[in-house]
Image (cartoon, rainbow, N blue to C red; front, top):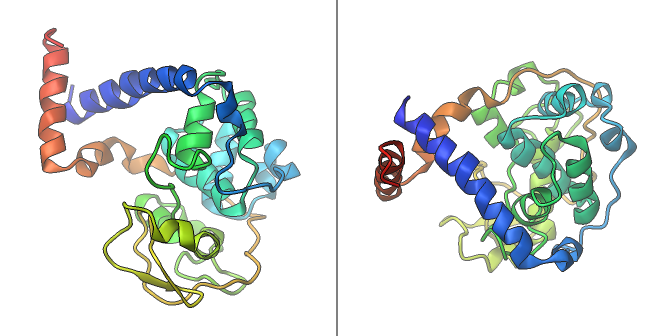
Length: 259
């Protein structure tokens, strides 16, 4: 078995689920009521009914199709497509957590609150993760093959063909600019957003400019392809050199029976 595959299984499957189990009991039932970003938008009907055919954005439609047809989708589309879209639109965190629990075959009660309210929506204000997981179309274009077949342009924030994730991301950054400016994990370069200096706490490296306070483009109509084609090789690349060495030793110890 390749080392990256073994590390991914040990860390992302065994380790992460164990981590979520203990945090579920540690945070308690009140965790479901947390809403640090004051997100109160109700889940739209097309979302709750899994109407993927009503969605235009190719990536979002593909993720929703997976939930509709199989009750499952890879954890990267869960976080960076479904969760990212919900974060940008300000969906109510508890309602979103309940939806994930009911729609997914692995949506156990102890799994979803910390994954959704904490990691995905940052509704706990940083109890679980130190930064929100928000990104625009540039990230999706770089990490998938959806954008080449989509009617939306990931480079555009305005116009009929503006990417909903790109426009949504910058509107979200502007909306929460004071919170993000105080985040210790902000990237080194500052961005201009609505006249205020703010950071860009995500994996996207957009090309400057100012965000818009205008209405977000729709996400309806479209087609989808495949999102997680690079998921198997990203784990080792994301690790720092030091972190990778530590992970390799841990994996080898586990595989050799010494862990």
